[in-house]
Image (cartoon, rainbow, N blue to C red):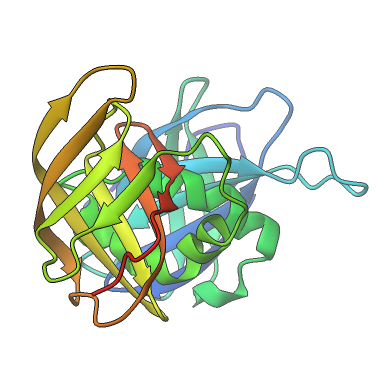
Length: 235
C-alpha cells in the first residue's frame, strides 16, 4: 500500500465512470500546473491520458482531467488516488464515481482532443469507451478549407483514398449515430503537386458502417485532424 505523501493533505477530487473500467478524475490544479506522469496507487490503475481545463473563463476554475483505466475496479466505490507529477506526488480523495455524462461541455472539449490523440494499439480498447461522448463535438465543428479530403470505398470498409502525404494511424468514422474505428494497415503514397494516398484499412473497434458517412477524424501520433468527405462517400 502506498502512503499518502507527507505534509500534503489530500485534495478533494471527483470521479466519473464511463464503464469497462474507464474513469475520468477531475481535480483542482494550482498555478504551477504539475504535469501528470502516472498513478502510484492504487496498484493496477493506469493513466491513459490527461488534459487541463477551466482557464480563461469569466469565472476560472482550473482543473486537471485524468483518464484512467481501472480493470480491477479498485476505485468503484471511490478512494484515494496517488498521482505522480513532475513536481511531487499528490493525493486525490475521490468519492464514489458519478456517470461520465455529468462532465460539462468545456470538460468534454478539453478531453476530446487528448483522448483521440492518445489512441494506440495498447490504449484503443479502453479509450474507445469515451468515443461516443467526446468525438461528436470535434466531428461537428466546421472543417477547415485546408483539411485533407477522404473518400471511403462505396462497397468496402477496407479501402479509402486521402489527399496529402501525412498517413494517419486510425480513421474514426460516424455513419448516422454509429461510430467505428479502422486501423491504417498500409498506405501507398503518390507524390506530386497534389499528393494522395490509397489506404488499406483493418477493423479496430465498433461495427462496420451501414449508411452514409457524415464525419471522419484522422487519428495521428499525438494529434488528430478532421477530414473533408468527398461527395458520394457512402456505403
